Image (cartoon, rainbow, N blue to C red; front, top):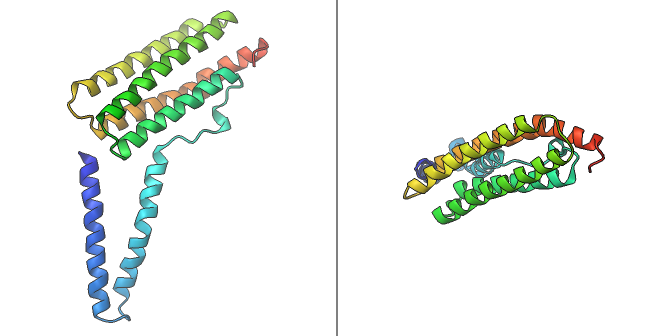
Length: 191
């Protein structure tokens, strides 16, 4: 719903700007108003792109924990989260949104199983606490998934709420908790 208003507002702004430019040029090329509006009009797509781009997660080395399997899974999860943003920003349809959210949930469970297996196999002392964090996150994501399933139309704000939760949780979890796991596993000879 918000996206419809936002799109309508942007479209209206562009129409008003074009009319202003046309009328301004009717009063002569010396009039600065149409030139200013034309410059603003030229900047709108750039600003819109920057706004959308800010929502995505750009993978960087700061998210690396040093364990290839875990880093690969984290990259995959970041890619899936970026698909959620794309689904919300570009109205890709309810079935696509639901499938992406489902894939995020499924892959997250798969990743947690693999990560916990590595911790278990190497005697990680904080395994139980780590598992509690994982279970809590999965429960929250499943609540979001149910909200999506209960609605006839998946609304963009729900997608973005899920995305913001997952982005915040994942980045915080990787940069704090998983970094410690990575250090421990590296000390045990894992790569």
